[in-house]
Amino acid sequence: MSIILNNPKPRKSGFSNSCPEIKNEGDTSKNLIFLPGTELKTISNIHEGNSCLYLTFDKASDSYKVLKTFSLDHGVPCDEFQREKQFCSLKHPNIIKIFAAEPIQKTVQQGEQSLCSHILMEYAPYGNFQELIEQKFFLEDERLVRTYFCQLIKGL
Image 1 (tube, rainbow, N blue to C red):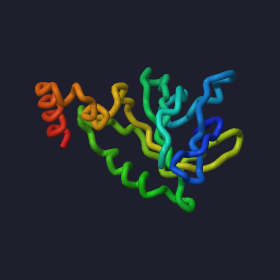
Image 2 (image 1 turned 90 degrees about the vertical axis):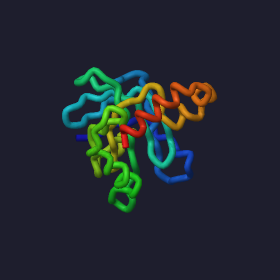
Image 3 (image 1 turned 60 degrees about the vertical axis):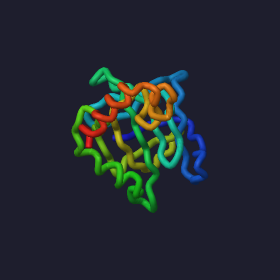
Image 4 (image 1 turned 90 degrees about the horizontal axis):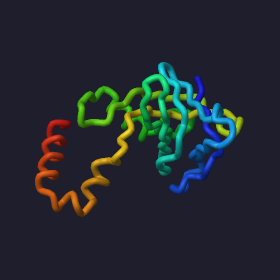
């Protein structure tokens, strides 16, 4: 299986590796990602940093998912990937689901093959908890704060 991504774009973090930029122009078959049990189509880049996040659409499950890619560290999965893959076994309605974690995956960027690690996870369309609590309206609504606090405790 291969991940096919187009147009590499330098990372903002200063790493020498790059986050491929996804463009849905022209031949969209180039924007397909093939993973066991999925038929993912890349929609857009979500985030760049030590890892890259891509919004994808899984035709098999008719749902959006996030693909997080990690560069290899001297041919082995990086520490960040190793830490995050430990969460694969967590199952709870208030925790993002992780569908797959591949330590070494072939990736094609502009026709050149390379290897990376990746995690395929549930898409949270309204952002993450940290972004929510940084919003002024959140702290002003005591009922909303209590609701999220209860969900957070249940998730732990």
